[in-house]
Image (cartoon, rainbow, N blue to C red; front, side, top):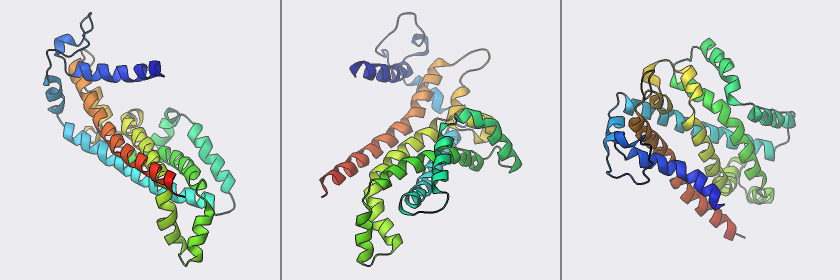
Length: 262
């Protein structure tokens, strides 16, 4: 386990380490494991790149929109699939599972043609719609497992006491599934935040670029700004890390709370 931790953590450490080094030390033959002399010049260069703030806002708008829509729709779909019996339910579940198995790059061209026919190319709405299409099957499948694990007797008892179906879902089911919703939102966030292929194919207008495309601008046909690229990658990873740390606290609190309830 320790070996795996080193394999996972060392690349992150080396990225941060290189981001604080001077440009001349980024590619030295002899590796330097500590960033001395320490400098913030790479971060300054990356932040002052043209349109950095616009690209950051584009990524945040698309990612949080995708997470919000996918979680709401996924939760309602999970409730319908676990609490109601209707024709085509099993077929729908199989379709969700099959869609999850298809590699996302295989659908780049169909997505491009579909958005082109809807006149949604080069738009953040079209990009968010594409991400939602890929994230939604995962949220439905994951949340279905969490909802299925909640005893239906709790909802029946609430309904016997006079609660409506909507009140039962909001007051009984939703708080109990909250740790699952938080965990699922992390996966949805990472999927939308890190995508490069779809943003590259669907977004040709520079003003609508997201941060993964912004990172590609540090490399040209003739040279690569390694210091800026590494510093930009560190900045790019920062919102995901902060989001995960906030979510992790609530996730652990929710799981602990559920563990002590009779």
